[in-house]
Length: 245
Image 1 (cartoon, one colour):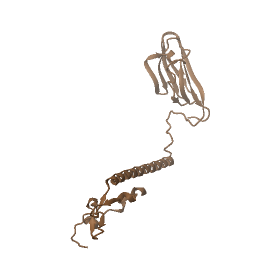
Image 2: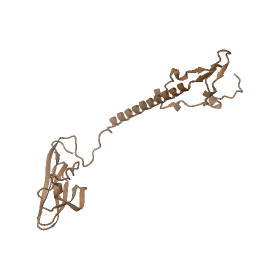
Image 3: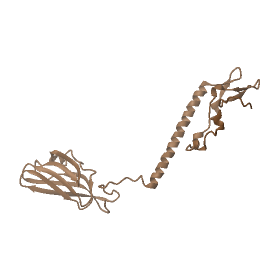
Image 4: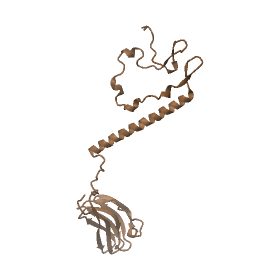
């Protein structure tokens, strides 16, 4: 081999069936790191291909190189086959990406399962949903001799998960200003809302659904009366029948 030749890269080479002369398909010429001094300089390292999956190197189909010969015996590509080949390659690429993403997702799921990351995180004031729960109600009332503010404090004897609240039994015109679960305000209104809105046929049903509090803490309901009377609050919910929060 002559040593003064200039390396250009690699391409498809054909033999003329009549003359036996080698013909280079210049349209397929590709310059790579194997051309020139890069070939002698060591090229790429083995870890350049680290992280590829087996199906990343799927081969071409047999008809990827199908074409026809012109009158001079040279190989030419069929435009229709070129378009079909691009479409097949695109489908194969999408399929490889889908399989790769599926494998990554499965690995992450297995890792999360080993470390218990799939288990829902439990909040400080959230009851233990794995224990059995039964229906219950807690309430308090206070009578005042003149118009003014009133505050009810319900000290829980058990863990409590609220579903609803009613002020049935309160004097006419009673207003509800705020409801606290411990130090957490779950509802408030500076002007107050008539207690009748929370009646069984009112549109404030389910206001406290999802709120919960541990045993030993207080539920505080603040309201006001236009005159002497009774202010009553009843909270419907559930408590654990076995275990606790």
